[in-house]
Length: 184
Image 1 (tube, one colour):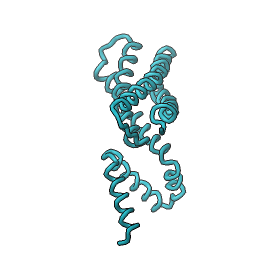
Image 2: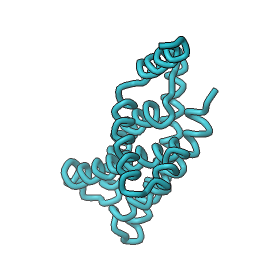
Image 3: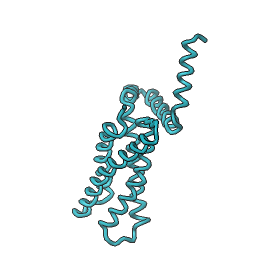
Image 4: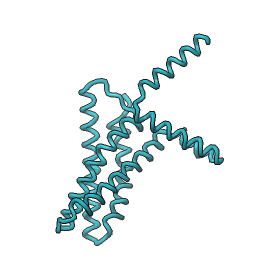
């Protein structure tokens, strides 16, 4: 083995060691998905995915975060806080519960999978967590306003929850890219 191959192997090994377990597991399934797309003659989609990997990962993780948010909302609304008589209060409390659960999940997947953020100091980590939380609180306020609007007009709260999450995903990507996980 020549020196160039040894250096490449060491570089690959160092990169693998630096990647967190969450990212390695995600990349495993991502590679399977790309392989399947190529095998069923959807190579253009696979290539598009590879060319726009950060955005595609954000969409997948955003979809998973949305699923976590919706499931947590349904769990809270219909199983945990079902006894609350005031419908607006029940929606707000359930939505806040869902927000907290989804916030924790979203921070984890955005940090580890989408933006592969590495904080060198505790101060950087705290700043990142706070900016993530503040931006998500801003978009949560938008979600709560949309959910309460649904109650006021008599719209199904779960349908509005899905619509609100689409709006929130778009805003969160913009804020994450420009403020929270921006490359230094």
